[in-house]
Amino acid sequence: MKLLTTLIFLSALARAQSIGQTTPVGAVCPLSESQTEKSIQAFSKIASTISSENRCLGCHGRVNPFIDSTGPDPENSDAPPSEFEHGSGKVDRKTDCNGCHSNMARRSRDGSESVWQTAPDFLTFVNKDATTLCKQIRGILHNSKDFLGHIKDDNGGNNFADTAFNGDRGLDRTMYSEKDVPTEKPHITHAALLKLGHDWVDSTGGEFKGDEACGCEPAHYAIRYSGSNKIDMAGINHSSELAPVDIPIAFNDDGTYTGDGEGAFVAGGTAAGCSEQSTTKVKFRVSGNATETSEEQALHLELEYPAPMIFDFSGECADEPDGGHLSLHKDIPVINAKSVFDMKGAVGEVIDRVDDAMPGAVTKMHLEIVKKE
Image (cartoon, rainbow, N blue to C red; front, top):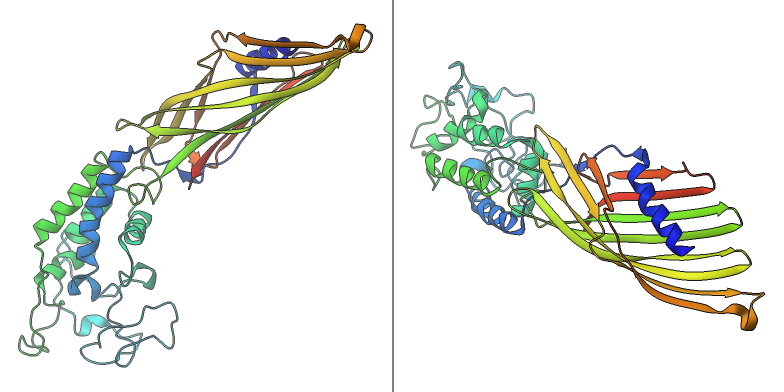
């Protein structure tokens, strides 16, 4: 009876239909451990630059022109405490900053004048570690092309990048002379910063992948798998359940992955006046590939059983001598038992399958992508 239910479960997976699939939320990061480490190291060089250069921090949180002196903003609790006093003192929040900062580098696309402004509070660089800054940049600039364009010339918009490397804060020199406000260029050249940017992008295969944390911190994933089988027909009442098993997966540099795990179907039931309890230990193997870029998000998964199932059975028949106690230990070979799934590749994405094509038998399967801490 147990062998029958095991075979029913395996065969049902092949023909079962999906009854539910979640909407993807956060994409899986398909980087290998070595790629992730290289990305973290490459971005740390960018983080140490943008979090220490005055020409970056002047707009990204270190100077608040709307308060007197330094410290917190009494009218905006979200603003980081200002570390330097604004050169011309406090200005009204409705002030046109171009009255003083009228000498910005022009926009590269059409040569028009750039407009001076400070970055919004949530884009401050002040007191943020490399991981936080990495996620911040990935969350705003969703692909590597936009990121590289941003540090080159703000993608043709208000040209803060070239202005920063001019070192003059875009000031009108008829109002603020070199003596009053000396030019202070960054300690790194624009070409060197662009090189750091390209090195970071190259470390992840030439483009941003996965969610905003991808390439910013280590990430580990697993395929969570569970199932059940219930038979109620022809005098057989039997149920079998596989508790959730997390099968850890590891990515290669090309986006392919593999993973192995194991679990056990725990079963019990009655048939023809006999009762049984059993466990079937099963090894699982998953493999496939993931494509997680700003243009495409997909994960192909193949689930296999790479080794014989180990079947342990004990049963009793009440009308047999001595209770008719039976026991059995057996290896059950698995032949051509492969299930294929195509998913979006998002953390928390679920596929539920059910098969009730055979009268009196219902097989269920649950598959989920989980992120491991």
